[in-house]
Amino acid sequence: MLALILTSLVTIVPFAAGHSAFFHPSMYGFNVTDQTFPFDNRPVAPLRDRTFTDWWFHGHLDFPPNEGDFFDLPAGQPATAEIACNKGATSYFASSEGGDIRNPSNPNDVCPGASSSEAYHTIGLETLTGCALAIAYNSDARAVKPEDFTVFSVNHTCVWTRFTDFQVPANMPPCPEGGCTCAFFWIHSPKSGGEENYMNGFKCNVTGSTSTAPLATPKLPRRCGADSENNRLQSAPGNCTYGAKQPYYWFNKEGNNMFEGAFSPPVYNDLYNFLDGAQEDIFENSYSFMPDPAPNAALPILATASEPGDSSPSSDSPSPDTTATATSSSETSTATAETPSDTTPDQKQKSPTCKRKQPSSSAELASRSLTTSRGALRNSIFAMTKRSRKLQPGKRASLWHMF
Image (tube, rainbow, N blue to C red):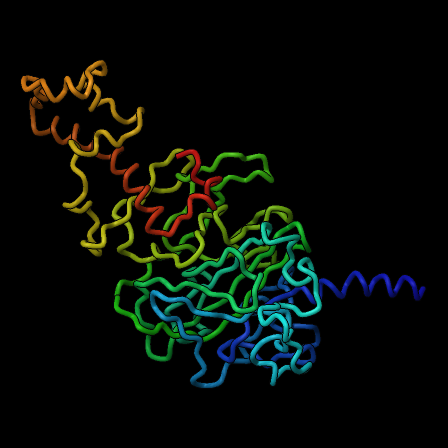
């Protein structure tokens, strides 16, 4: 019997150590301990199979931060959070029931004394699934609804280090009087540990803001990246949700917005089009063209920086004549019809009598320009989209290799 008990303890303790949370005095439940509730509802306790009241804000809305405690979000710069499996492993150890347990030889140790599987719910750096910060422009946390949160920053290697940087979009508008309401979200890899959500709410404030562009209404993320675990070797970029996206609410008794199975959890990485870093395209003026996502849908087009809020392509955008050569073989029928395929570049330059066929009507001109430029713009501006969102080709080749 004793052997059975000891075996059970060995099995349970690592997972208890492996739970991690965002820690800062601005958070709801900052001083909640394992004795505050009839059950362990510390900020690090996982959320699963709970009622909405129990999991929303981790059930900590009755334990708000002190007046004036905010987590600053510097526009266009990183906000450094502390993530740990115990408050005693953070800079705020003084108010931890266990005191200071930080690792003096490794200040970035998330969970001193635990293995990577125990501390990070992962079998290695390559199986980390990322975590996110989301914001609601409302100072009253009790008035915030799940659909009000917009993910504004993602870190793909969270929760690997205690000090974790979350890049803040440069165009974040200022918060209302009394600040904004934010939350930390994490769902770990299914390869290490059971199905679990993590959410910690906190008071936040955008600093150094130079923009007043409002955030767009967040939409549900869609699983669209290459997914080798489920034998989907190619991504479907047209099926992605672009722009403002909601965080995941998953695997609880009520209030879920995601319904993936236990071994295919929604995660904050390329699989759901959450790029690493600041989510720079979450504003109402971020896109000039935004089709509904579908497996074969056209790709969205980012609005140009010179025309904030304009829903039409910029006058600086390449014209049909200059972009025709940038289109793919399936999108250049107009251009190739106007220039014989067997004509060499030298022959083109020496053929002053080679003239483009004039359209018979303005309607034909409009149709031709739209047909020629739409495909070109879609390709060329899609490349711009990836660059502007800090896409790292080497890292994300599996998502975008088909392009």
